[in-house]
Structures are given as structure tokens and as C-alpha cells.
Amino acid sequence: VTPHESDPLVIRGPRLTLRYATADDTPALFALGSDPAVTRYFSWGPYTSPEQPAAYIASLPSKRESGSLLDFLIIEDGEPIGVTGLSELARRDRRATVGSWFGRAWWGTGANFESKALVAALAFERLGLERLTAWANTRNGRSQRALERIGFRREGVLRAWHRHGETMHDVVVFSLLRAEWERSALREVLTTIEGTAPPQFTVA
Ligand SMILES: CC(C)(COP(=O)(O)OP(=O)(O)OC[C@H]1O[C@@H](n2cnc3c(N)ncnc32)[C@H](O)[C@@H]1OP(=O)(O)O)[C@@H](O)C(=O)NCCC(=O)NCCS
Image (cartoon, rainbow, N blue to C red; front, side, top):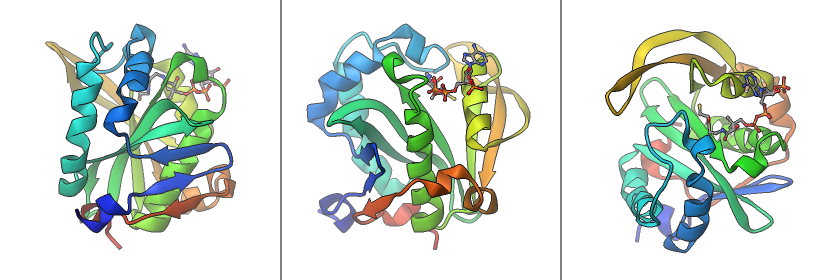
């Protein structure tokens, strides 16, 4: 077992913890992701069988290894409430994309803010990234507002950028740069990062 799997990343804030999902988390993830309101703007879901979240969880170690996806469960009081993580890593350009989703019961609770603070600390402080990108469907007004209030800046619209089945969707592109994060409220969230980062995700 590689160091980054035997000594996994765990990121703790005042209220939330980010950790890797394991097979034991399948029922909880199924419950969260089987709500059509949650997956409405996604290319996947809603889950209709526990085999779907089980397959997602089983795919994660090799994606950490290859540098294609670094996803975490968002834990509150010991229970998973959502998923966040980094994808679309460009090591040369020191950027990655952050994406998140929460069970409906946790929308509007501040969990999104804290989870973004934890991911941003990982990205800028530990991994050495210079930019976080975030996508929101042009029709997903809630996601756009949520990103703006956290301090992400709206950059524009990319047409026909994401495919869901046979339908192409326009997305709004947002970003947060290292210098903006340093001055933002996200930075004030007390964060501890334990464990070894997967080498493919470390640029600095
Ligand atoms: C998107 C998501 C992560 C945001 O987290 P959240 O806790 O719901 O966000 P917040 O409550 O902090 O912020 C939502 C903002 O949108 C506003 N809002 C709510 N519904 C809205 C709508 N239909 N249109 C525009 N704005 C809306 C809220 O008033 C709030 O803005 P305010 O702070 O100015 O009042 C969460 O809703 C979620 O998991 N959604 C399902 C998955 C998803 O779409 N993920 C994002 C993919 S890019």
C-alpha cells in the first residue's frame, strides 16, 4: 500500500471533516444521492441502486493514484452529508476544479462554506495550487449565488461545455485565485490537514 493510501488525507474544520469514502459509506451515499433535487444539474443520478455509489467509491483509489480525482466525503457529527473534491488537475498550470454536492437537508446550513474552506486550504496550502475553478450550470442559480458569496469570481459562460446524455449544457465558469483566498473569509476557518497527499496532486 502506498503512503498516501495507508496515511490518508483527513481535513478537519470546526464543524466538518473531509475524509476518503470507503465501501462502508455506500448506504449513506445512496441515501444522499437518490434525491432528484440533489442531482438535477449533474450528468449522473439520481441513484436508483446502491451498486451505483458502490461503483463510484470503488473507483476512487485508482483516480487518486492517477491524479484524475481527489474526492472526499463531507462528515458532520460522524455522518456523511455530501461530497467535495478536486478534479481536472493541471499540474503545469497549478490549477484544479472544485465540485461539491450536499443532501437536501444541508443546503443553506453553512456546510458548503466550510467545506470550500477546507478544500481551499488543501489546494493552496498543501498541494501548491494557484487557482481553483468551479462550474455551475447556467440554470443552477443557487450554485452560482453560493459560489459568489464564498468569494469565487464569475468569469463567463462556456457554451455546450457539459454533456448530460444527449443534451449539451452551457456552464458558468467561476474561479478563486490564491491571492483572493488569502484575503477571504475562507482563510479564517481553522483547518488542520493530516496525512499524505497523493503525489500526482502535489505541485509544490
Ligand atoms: C450548490 C450547493 C452546494 C450550494 O450550497 P447551499 O448551502 O445550498 O448554498 P447557500 O445556501 O450557501 O447559498 C445559496 C444562495 O443561493 C440563493 N438561492 C437559493 N435558491 C436560488 C435560486 N433558485 N436562484 C438563485 N439563487 C438562489 C440563496 O438565497 C443563497 O444566496 P444568499 O446567500 O445571497 O441568500 C447545494 O445547494 C447543493 O449541494 N446542490 C445540489 C448539487 C449542486 O447543484 N452542486 C453544485 C454543482 S455546480
